[in-house]
Length: 227
Ligand code: SF4
Image 1: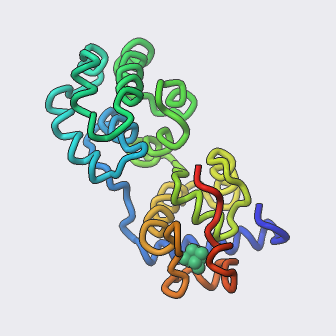
Image 2 (image 1 turned 180 degrees about the horizontal axis):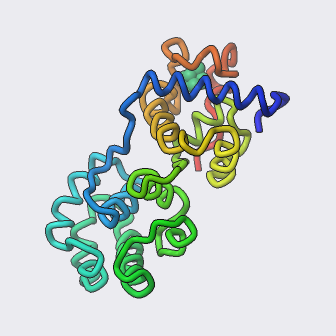
């Protein structure tokens, strides 16, 4: 947790930050395109080290050729690799997609599971991907910690951790579960637009009154080291 700030003061500040973000980004939602839980899982796996825009170009063709879990479980590896090649790390991602599909067929009757403890047993699925599914498909609280959440939460002093799982634990302690999904989506947007990695635009930032970075020189403000 952040420095000498008491837990109740930290919760109050987090609530103000969440309220400001809600005003700034009322419609914040994931920018990946999908229609089914399986498509959400595929798109999220493909989005690792790749832009959402690129993933959204690849998935319509992929889903036309390999439409569902059963088809992915049976699809030839070279066909999957060819279809997703432009998203990068395509061999690793192909292993994850095919492996996840085979596990879902074998253990979950062809349905993407809706519990964190089941999702994280699938190949290529960590807590970040699982939280995307929980929050955006299954209507459960899902606190997604990506590179933007990691950086902005650290700069805001909402966590002193750099490990994504610990950041998730810190944020989930100071925010009510019903805010987790929207808060993380809004923090991602804020990280893309204002609290950018190299030179955060503090002068334009509505969170400035609640940010401990006020008065900190730019170099020191950059946040945790990239992972
Ligand atoms: S005031 Fe600066 S460091 Fe703090 S959240 Fe805004 S842009 Fe980021």
